[in-house]
Amino acid sequence: MASKLEEDLSCPVCLDIFEDPVMLSCSHSFCRECVEKSWKEKEDKECPICKRRHSKGSLPPNFAVKNLCETFLQERKRRASEDLCSLHQETLKLFCLDHQEPVCLICRDSKKHIKHKIRPIDEAVQQHKKNLEKTLQPLKKKLEALKDVKMKFDQTEAHMEVQARHTERQIKEQFKKLHHFLAEEEEARLRALREDEEQKRQRMKEQMEALRAQIADLSQTVRATEDQLTAQDVSFLKNYKAAVERVQQRPLLEEPQLSSGALIDQAKHLGNLGFKIWTKMKYVVPYTPVILDPNTAGLNLILSDDLTAVRDGGEKQQLPDNPERFCNCCSVLASEGFNSGTHSWDVKVRGNRHWYLGVLPESARRKRVIWSRVWAVGFDDEAKRIRVNLDCNRGELSFSDPDTNTLIHSFTHTFTDRMLPFFHTWLNPPLQILPEKISVSVEPNYTSMML
Image (cartoon, rainbow, N blue to C red; front, side):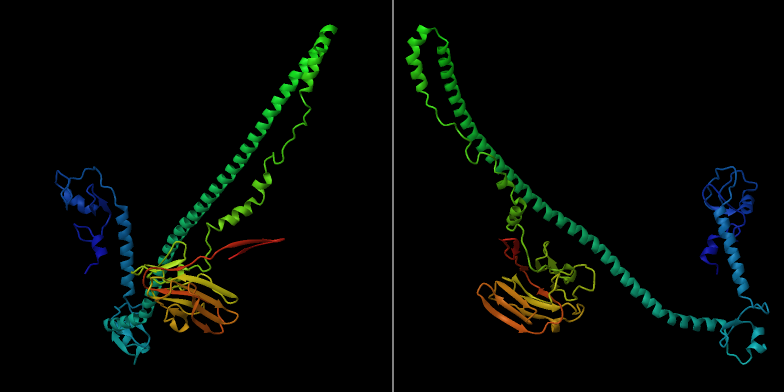
């Protein structure tokens, strides 16, 4: 039976491999000799297949088909030679199991293969195909495993793009808020400067007007007296008494002085300006001691944009199965852990009826049951907030209700690993890590910000 390729490379007229193939205007191909014979003694040059009239005068050669045919014939010739015994030029019909090679009938009876196990070539092919298929199975499994890994890589790469764009938007949003705060603060500072300038200018204007009035009055008296001094003797003496009285009525008051604080108080407006703005930012910029790591979150969890709250989304999300992520759908860790010092964080739990809070060793595996390594407490119907306090140095982990100042439970253990804050929930409302109050204190030669 001819192969599909051989059928495609066969002339529809002679049914043999194309020889000097040509292509008609209808795109069908034939051997040149075949199509010329079919047109002999015909007025219309029609395609032997579709009967469409050939619109061109010549028969252009189909070089693409010609090259394919030459390659096919060479390959068929090579295969035919391979099917013959190189020693006896006989057809290879048998297979020597000892030498693992095809042999002909003459080879079977030769000294070289005497007493060897010989099988018909079709039986050997069938058995060897089974053996090869069995040998191939581990590779096929490995290939499937690699494809699964590639799919995870592709999913991770796509998720990275989503993460990057989402993080970019959040960064821009945070800076937009900061820019808005700084713009408002700038406007307030400039407005205070303008008001200060206006007040100082108004006060100076009033003082200048009073001074100008005094100068004008004295100038008039001086001019009138000087005119009197140039008068004739008799006239001068007649008006002398009045002139003296006029001068004496203008007491020599002390010259007015610039009042204190007349200039713009630049020190008030510029002194420690950046520090003052920074200290004011504590009212608009929250600080949360623990930040959630979305790369550890189970598939059911949805984190807030600022990574301080977590809730159960109800359905599994399509997320990469990275090593850090929990196989448990409802757990998430903080982004940073602790192995020394004392650390505390408050979590709002009010209304949530299924939660666990605590710590987990950083080295604990995430793809298996984790509860044997979790240090945590669970749902308390009375609590609104839970305070988690970890003292790594003393080896103490305690949980309390900060609203009632009541200790709920405490553990004592020597923590040798870095401990990560642990959160678990499968109900709403969300668990929320509460921000801490920020205070700024200034001491001589020392400035600190306390949380």
